Image (cartoon, rainbow, N blue to C red; front, top):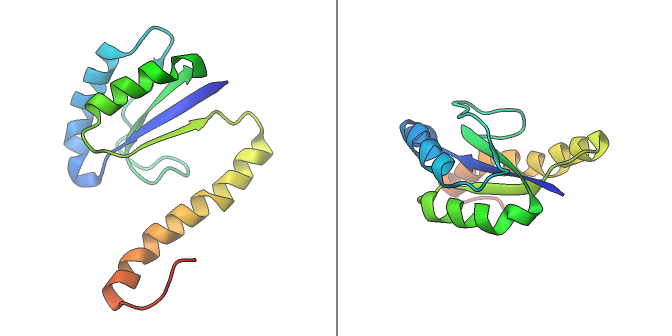
Length: 117
């Protein structure tokens, strides 16, 4: 199985992206494809990021590199979806919840009203 890892950057941290990308590139094992830094949200992904594509067998090595260098940044790891219908469902059922929560959580905190269920 192929895996993707996405390393996300908040907008106020975007200047650090090229440096971290370069550090990660020097420490990855052969067989890992490192994508470019995307300085914007892409598709269902909510923040600027870069992506790694690698076989599951390399997961322990990739995780060790990312964990040692990420500096508290969010990392999303998921299997590559080869089924378009499953990807469509995940975009709605998973990413819809993520984006909706991210959009409304500040309002809920500010007003002290409401719940996320």
